[in-house]
Amino acid sequence: MADNFLGNKMEEHLARQQHSKAAKTTRSFNQLVLENRSYRAFDKSFEVNEHHLRRMLEVCNKIPSARNQQVLRYRMVWGEEAEKLNAFIRLGGALPELNLPAPGTEPSAYIIICSTVEESRYVSVDLGIAAQTILLKAADMGLNGICIGAFNKAAVTETLALPCEPLLLLGIGKGAEKIVLRDIEAGESQNYYREEGVHVVPKLRLEDLLIH
Ligand SMILES: Cc1cc2nc3c(=O)[nH]c(=O)nc-3n(C[C@H](O)[C@H](O)[C@H](O)COP(=O)(O)O)c2cc1C
Image 1 (cartoon, helix red, strand yellow):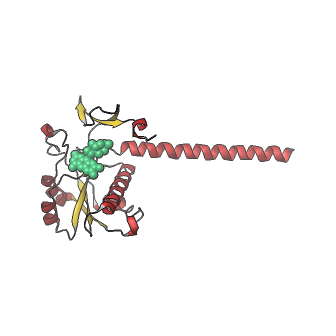
Image 2 (cartoon, rainbow, N blue to C red):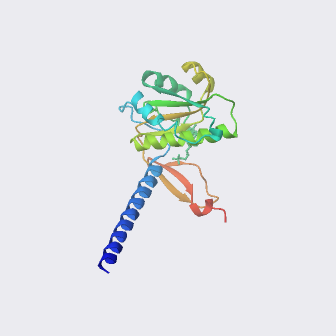
Image 3 (cartoon, rainbow, N blue to C red):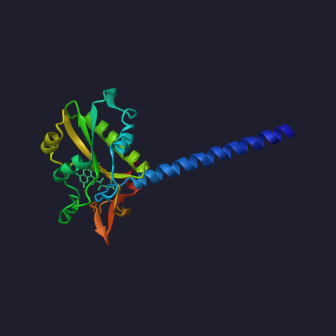
């Protein structure tokens, strides 16, 4: 009887521990995803260096890849070299009147993601996985970033003497803007906007994303 009582108590205790561990992990992961927003203004007094970028890129040989082909390559750009790329990017296409990034708030560093093979559906999927995983790592390190598809490919290739085709730039830095997500109804505008200096990103509710 006594043995059983102690055994049950121990099981309850272990189950409680397990549960609270799981709850903690879920919360902090959700928080990370929430913090991983697209920043279009950075605090240039914080210098992102090679060491920061390397830590972010440590995820790249651990992520999935279609047929495990691993065709993506990564170029780190920081310091003065990063400044050269500022002229070749466009941010905030939905807010053209703001001409983002504002001078002095550009990304402090960049990661250029290239492919060694021609673009295809599989390369694009690999690209998305890589970009999001790197950006999550940046957020985990207390930094921020943005995917940049709107860039001058020829100019970036030439400036960095890239040996393969750049598909996407990641702008990296210490984010210097307040960004909030706002639930919207299906059919409402999905364009992001500014409200009293805050960047608002409309997001569809989970219910509207589910197929029943
Ligand atoms: C593949 C891809 C390319 C993007 N390219 C740009 C870009 O060129 N300029 C820009 O300002 N934002 C760009 N974005 C950021 C999106 O505008 C942003 O994800 C969207 O507004 C939602 O905001 P959120 O990332 O904070 O949820 C890109 C995002 C992705 C996934």
